[in-house]
Image (cartoon, rainbow, N blue to C red):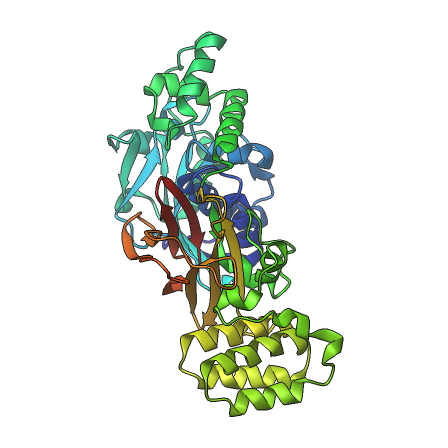
Length: 472
């Protein structure tokens, strides 16, 4: 292998990103989900590259079935290279000054590694353009000499890492293992361990919920890790989870079989379940247009296209766009009309509806959008209309236009007063919010986001709150 004095740059296979996205749904909190996402990408990419350059077998330190339980508690990943262990610590933060290495990887005998690799992920909106950089490596002794902060992480400056991976390979050949001896963790009776586990289940970051010796004794045992993971997942089954909007858009390209779960449905399905109108859910322009499609109007596309071209009022234009999405499957004239209208109109509602209709009749078109809704449990009283949260996604080059709309289900229903629709950024800070005043038929917020951006939609009504966290 040639000398590598600069950070190693590797392309990330789109398949690695896709498999990492599926892991996000197998964690109970956003923190654990991102630990799984980042480190699965780094693990798969580096393992593939190393295996092409070394004759020895290189395998994940933990089997895939055990990794979600590990990432539920601690970030990081590791590769086993014969007797040598390489620990990886990945981040999307560019030009990070200091790497934080959890104390578990340094001071617990079960997890100690010989070499610690700092990895930067550069994840682009187009997965095929994503790449990573191995900033450098450090030995176990180098990490232990670093400062340890209040969050039980060893801090190692960027310049302290050795960028030339050739030296790592040379060290592996000459010295083999490079870890220093560490103290064994205390052992507790099973009853004590079971109580420690229960103390960790409700904590957002369980590794900080116990003294390090107690936590280390618990987490070092695979059986206790698995039980902690199962109980936290059961507790989180009704809580907020991160959903990948990128996967929703990829669904129209056939890249995944099922990207929608946890209650998200098409508006047609919701309307059918509640005997309402899809159009009323989307824009409050009544009429059950679903009944006027299919064999009733087999040759209606040219007429509807003409209506769309000649109409001047928004209601008629929306109705024509919606109808083309129902009857224009694979029809070249309908597709061309929707594309042209979407490109020419400046009205955001019309552009979104044109994109959604285009997505129904030509899912592979780059301008196609998608719309999904979720019926919310807000403790409404008998006789009050259920409320649905509707998300519409519209690709706009490297960005995605996202509209969040809160509607009551029912053609003439209104929202209850004082219901709030809120958007929080990735740090939990509110940056948009709106409140119903009574007799409102909808609440609406919109944003434009880059690939990889995270945000949370919050709906509040009285003592009830629903949170949905998304990654673009």
